[in-house]
Length: 473
Image 1 (cartoon, rainbow, N blue to C red):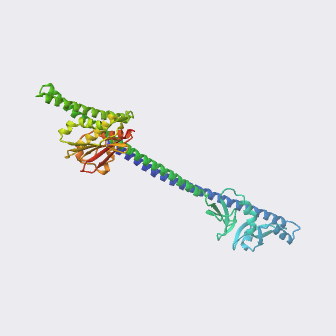
Image 2 (image 1 turned 60 degrees about the vertical axis):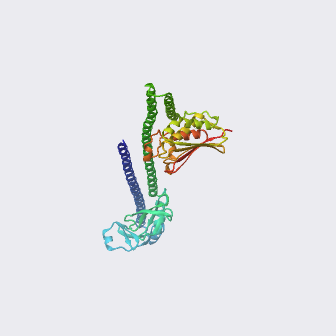
């Protein structure tokens, strides 16, 4: 059975470990996939912005060239028209000299002169002859006419900026002082030395959000694993405790059966002796009758212990508490134990304080508690054959004390002996069988009367149990 439980718990723990590993790996993969998706989306966004800027520049250049061509083809063309055209089209701030080879090939294209982009195009002149136009682009005009219109209306937390070859900021849709650069994308031939950079403000970065969510999921998953582990631990403790209780109950049944067997055997033996007429005289017969009576009382006491314990467990035990003298109750208990005490050679010292007040007690319950203390003193006296019983008044309490000179109790077990089914785990106690509920009953009876029970003991020096019950007003 234990091996089956261990195998079950091992399987659950292994499944939990596999779940933890799979959960961690899944979280890491989800985080990596989310970050990759964000980077791809950011790159697409930057690429679209770069494409949009480049198309806007090309469109503006096309419009500028068309207007220039219209001026050149005008029959009334004058040089002053070029100056007027330059003022209307600030995108180009100067004319440039270009190689002879481009003139021969014709067409339109961009090329770099230093760090400036120059647009060169062959367009028809006033007489239909080709005219070569070379125009240097103005950086300030590009910023005002193209970048501000194209990127200025961008919505959302992301920021776009245009950087030059040296990573100097040419334009930004919003201030990027507290933002983190995510990636950059280059322009085409229209802006070969510039790049679009995408920034994310601190605190609202999607990557940061993904990482925070991953940490939150990891913490929640770790908490779940902790709960599972704690649940397993609690379940294991409950199962182990239930197994221990089952074992203790089994021992309880065996011990009670043994305790019941002893008085029954004596009653049967003396009863058969009397029935067969083997008692030699009247005095012997009376002695046998007395033994049968005392053993039947002992049997009754054992059965009462079991029944009372059952009532206590079911919450059905009730006590009839009223003022009553304590001294006769103690004498009744000692009289019931007179034969086993004499048979085992015990000497009993009884000390009753004078003028004892009445106590608020249930007489039968107190007699049962004292009887259990005396019975324990007999069982665990070892070689010592001396028991001291004392009754005294202590303030608003009456103290009933039972002391022996037996094997004693270890300090770590002094409190546990009042637990149900608990027995001291030492070799010298195992020979003395018992139900394991006697001291638990004593504690319950004391507390039900508003009192308590105390033990003072050292190994090898005996034990002293004191039962306190309240004095009657």
